[in-house]
Length: 238
Image (tube, rainbow, N blue to C red):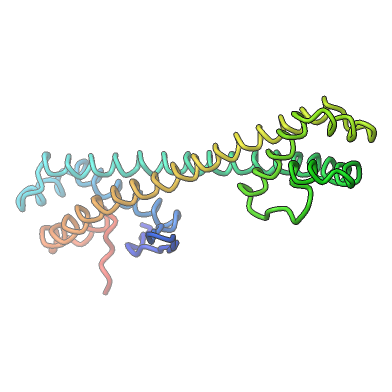
């Protein structure tokens, strides 16, 4: 019978206002498998069931463990889904960013040439200086550019001489709005994924506490029959 280690492997993430320790997924799955095996076999094998009942682990007590396992397993599945949603949102955002950056930078370069003698337009469209490295800052610059350009007929006319039409400016603005939407979706999914991890780990802690006591008492109840401990997945180290 395979032996599953009880040790947790953890990855620690440090945030400005908190520290989150995330358990290694392979260890979590092994933990849940081990707990399910122990509780299920304790219920199914009559001799084990009789002996642990003598020290207080009757049907009601085993049902408590089953509820804790079911809850932790459900939250573990949910956590995986939330992170899948986060990864998908990030991939979608990355595609939108590439499209927006390509379009915007082309329009920006042409606007700098077309409006080189229009100081007011240069300020209104924020044509000078470097572009922000952060996505939020970059989106603000892009928003200023397209919003103001589309409200200034002289800018539209000047840029239009280089085949950047009003329609193309509107398309750039739409790309910016789509990227903003995907950015907000990604932030939302990141928050939900982090919260699902915290919630799952709390449930795993509850299950671990129950299992710890169960194993200690099972060792006492089945001390003279170590083969039954193996049925519960508890290999006695010699």
